[in-house]
Length: 192
Image (cartoon, rainbow, N blue to C red):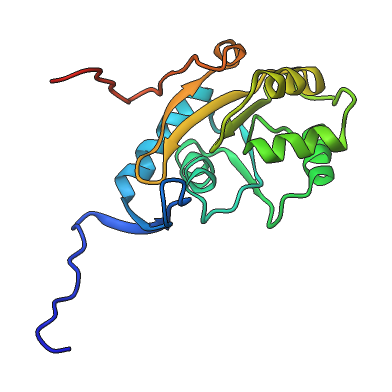
C-alpha cells in the first residue's frame, strides 16, 4: 500500500543469517563484514592458526558457526580450507587420517556420529583441534572424543548475531562449565 516505508537497514549490514529459533521463531540477524572479520581473527588467535594450517569445513555456510569458523579464518590466515558439501562421517575420518587438518569445527551431533562410525582410536596429528560449537558438550562426549581422537575437543560459544565470543580450550574443556572470552572480546559482569 502507498505510504508504507521500506525497512531501513543499518549502514554496516553486509549479510543476514537466520537464527536457529532456539528462543522462538527463527529470524534474520544482520551482521557487518567487520563482525565476521573480527570473529575470524578470534578463531585464528584462539587456535593459533596460520598459513600452514588446514581447516576442514563440514558445516553448512548458511549456519553462523559454519560461516564464521571457515571463510574469514582461511582468508585472514591464508590457511588451506577444504569444504565439503555434505557431512559424511567416513569421509571426515579419512580426511583426518590422510590430510593435515589443524581445525575441525563440528556440532555435537556430528561428534556423536563420528564416534559411532569409528569407536576405535583414530590416527591423528598432534596439531588437530576439534572445535565443537552450537550446542552443549557433555563431559561424556568430551571424554569419548579424547579416547577416539587422542585430543580433547575445545568448545565455542556465541550467537548468530555476535559470532563466537567465548571458548574453552582443550584443558578447560574437561570441565563443562569452564570458558573464557575469546581474544579480542571484552567481558563485563554486573551493572555498569
